[in-house]
Image (tube, rainbow, N blue to C red; front, side, top):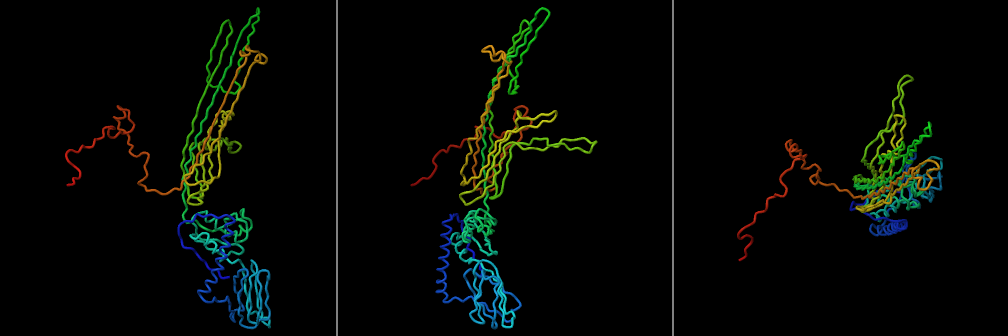
Length: 501
């Protein structure tokens, strides 16, 4: 089998895709094209030279390497009469002797074997190292039919097929790998040189194709979050003193709030005759809004990371220096805020695959761990990770990340807190409700370079104000000109314009 590299002329990008059924149709089309090309070549060139190999008289000490296709043969002319032909593995290749000086070598199956030809005296006439594989010309023809603008070369690599060259995008590279997998008789699942979902045949396709122009993807992400919280507290603390002769009885009831929300509260106190009562009540409502719109740009296939927030030190352990030395606390900084990580893969000019991971974290003071002088903060984390396929300019919205928490606790004096109406004097109520909703919108774009003159800096035109302007006018930046007093265009008087006689 004589291998020749054939490449297609470069051209515009191809964006066609093929499924398993269409790939098999392409293979049949390649077979038909190859079959039709043979009569056409014969008619154009008259006759084709038969594959013949002549062995010289001085080649008995060397071994020739011959590549054959399955089902193809070659004629070997010997320099002297042959007596015996030895084939190491007849399942790979076979030798048929038609005369004493002609041997037909036939490829049977994939593999490699050795063939030796001896004369009547037992001396070696010729030795051949045979490698049998599939006829890759059919695969080359199929690839040219499916992707006429791709530059792909097909090379044999043992029992595998090596694809080298360049394609327009990853979609064409995957399509070429699928066609080669179907040509080897396996399932179509794609492979990049390793065992993938395509099975054993896919693992025999070594995809070494390169992308001609790696696209850059700009990702615009909008992270919006609304948090609401409501706190209601009501409790009564009482103290009293009763005298029975020389004996004094003193009592006090202080009901702490069960949820531990010792926030500032309002109270009303009443006292008289050694008795006092304090009414503690609080109603609190709050709203928090978080908005971040990071924008990242990355090359297709690479990963980009973005973080808006900060780092907080977290104690991780102690480092001691010897039995008499002191110990120091080792810390590690943990990131918090709005984090974004994405990996784009451009499949064609119109579509791309995105792996997006977003995270919104903040310090939670309610879950802070305290031990003597050691304080370890807690964190509230909302995380989302997904892989999607979008067109350039399309938007994916991840919504519905709603969280609601409602807590309520009642503390009081046992028995007395259950008395209707009067039990209010002996108990406290603590109620808390938290609601949060997070929305993440992702919009990818195919990024194109722009001129440096088209970029506008955010500090363009800014200048610090002079000291007199800052002291007397309270200005922080210099103001040029006076707004609203732009010169008016002059009014033309008399006859002007074009006059046609």
